[in-house]
Amino acid sequence: MKLQQLSLFLENRPGRLGAPLEAIAAEGINLMTLSLADTAQFGILRLIVREWERAKQVLEHAGWVVNLTEVVAVDVPDRPGGLAEVLRVLESAGLNIEYMYAFSLRRGDKAILIFRFEDPDPAIDVLKTAGLHIVDAEELFSHFP
Amino acid sequence: MQTELWNDAAGGFHPVSAPDFLPEARLQEVQLRRLRAVVGRAYAHVPLFRQRMEDLGLTPEAIGGLADIAKLPFTVKTDLRDTYPFGLFASSMGDVVRLHASSGTTGKPIVVAYTREDVEVWAEVMARTFAACGLHRGDILQNAFGYGLFTGGLGAHYGAEALGATVIPVSGGNTERQIMVLKDFGVSALCCTPSYFVHLIERAREVGVDLRELPLRVGVFGAEPWSDAMRAHIEAEAGVKAYDIYGLSEIIGPGVASECAVQDGLHVFEDHFYPEIIDPETCRPLPDGAEGELVLTTLSKKAMPMIRYRTRDITRIISEPCACGRSLRRIRRIGRRSDDMIIIRGVNVFPSQIEAALLEVEGTLPHYQIILTRERGLDQIAVEVEVTAEVFSDKIRALEAVRARLAQAIEHICGIRVDLRLVEPRTIARSEGKARRVIDQRNI
Image (cartoon, rainbow over all chains, first blue to last red; front, side):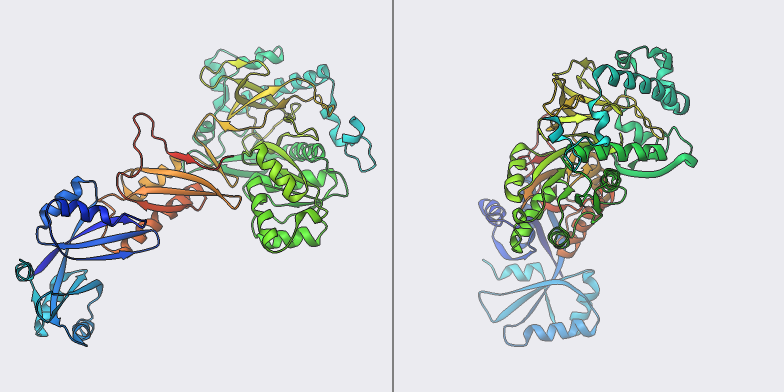
């Protein structure tokens, strides 16, 4: 039910984002999505890729410090209020979101929300109980050729 | 020539300066008498010194002449750390009237002590320092050295009072207030670190104050190395004569040596502090004129005599007579040190302290480097630390917390706030032998 997310430390200066992306592209690894969180001084690049083991190996070999985190993907209808509905569920259950990001699928009318919880398992239970659909890796990557 | 450089307001001889003009033979007589006394005192009261003398088969009677000082064992900074806090005191606490402290090579500071006589000697040498810089009774001195454990503030304070000048104990920092005092109180002389004064000049300009139009006449600068180019800048921008003074807490604080009107080397107050130059590798004494490490012996200190203290400052002794008429030998201005100590805004910082702080937070020592820059005249210290797998997190908050913990640990140990930057792994240059931990871009 959970996805493996890779995180990399980047300095916040020109050209730093391109290097790791080129390194995995050179290995023919396709990105599902990414998110970048930054401060004035540094940034954290978070990646969702199908072949995360190989991507991790490639990046670590090239010298990056890579962190592996379990995140939860939820799909919602790609319309106004889609995200708000999920947030209401999490809020009423008193669950704290460490961070989140979202993207739309190329085909279909779905948006995918990626959540990072301190402890993902209770959150998954809450989301499921509320009738929301958790997207696992197999399903997510089936949208890609 | 001499009368105009002496400092009585009436143009005459100022009594405070009398020992600066002793004939050589008389000076050496004083030095030898005091050297014998201080060696005897340290031998009698400081176990570490006595032990080292015994190891060398020496007693205080070994001092027949001044040249015999070369037989004596050295004292080094780690001796102060190893005997922390009071192990090198030669007086009982009942006779100690003051303690100061400065940073040591690890987390612990080094502690120095003064008897009432020591405080008087300190005031005397600082009065002679200010006199050599052209101050006299009637001058208004803004003392912007920090008051507190640092020896700069109180050392300058007592000296200026002993000279008869008017002291404004404004202490360090709060640049706006410094500028107001400078402007409103008719300040004629100011003392602080040179880098802080450059900052003050710039800040004054920003708020529309031209220091050249104020009565300020003399700047007395010390506690960190600075260059002739910086002096030229200060003198032109502030309309002052800028003097370099030298001292260190272990010996007494400021007041060990001072420039005179000639501004060509610093006269060592050698009736109280006996200077030697040694080769820092072989520890052999070098003749006057040769460059090496400055070694100082306190000839009159009571509470904490320092015998042949290795300062780690590289300089040479100038024994040629000075145009000012002082018979005291001079040392060249200090440009570099023989160890890795960094002096930043008057605070001594050792890379080993930074390492101790990083180690404390991370458990293992990450790759790091220290970068020194000078922005708007003020020294800046940045510490770059490579992110390791142990501390890396996918959460910004967690990384910011790591950064804050590292910065706090450094501030706690070194007493100085640093700009702590997390950098990507393998971005700090690796070197074959000894890592180059300090990148000094200050162009002193």
